[in-house]
Image 1: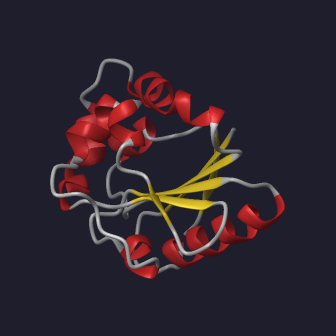
Image 2: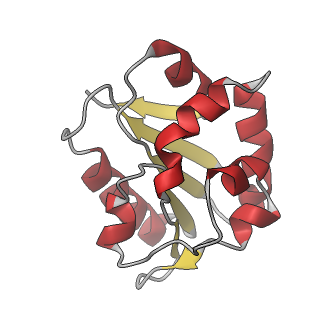
Amino acid sequence: MKSIALYSIKGGVGKTAAAVNLSYLTSLSAPPCLICDLDPQGASSYYFRITASKKYDSDKFLKGSKKIYSNIKATDFENLDLLPSDFSYRNLDIELSEEKKPQKKLKKNLESLSDDYSHVFFDCRPISHSSPKASFQPPTSFWFQ
């Protein structure tokens, strides 16, 4: 599984549009794909007209595996699924940076997705300080500014 994060230090640079379009195009050539909307504004979720379950939040995302799987939703596009955003994601980068080994935790939590998805795209919120930014670096990443 390839994981690709789209993030920047500022908003309004096209991260969401790029994540949505790249995930759709990838789902056509290397299915199936997942897009994780990690921006609390939920623009990727809005693109696909999908909302998160009321019981889903950043704690469940950080617990990983079954908690993530039960909240993945199918989009209108074949071979493209979405993990919708939740407003609690506004502190996700801080919560992750407080972990002892944040990269290892994130990788472990998402490992089981490799059985079902060839690519996972992360639409991230603007990241304003270096500590949390360093904690969120999936194995393959693009930096958009």
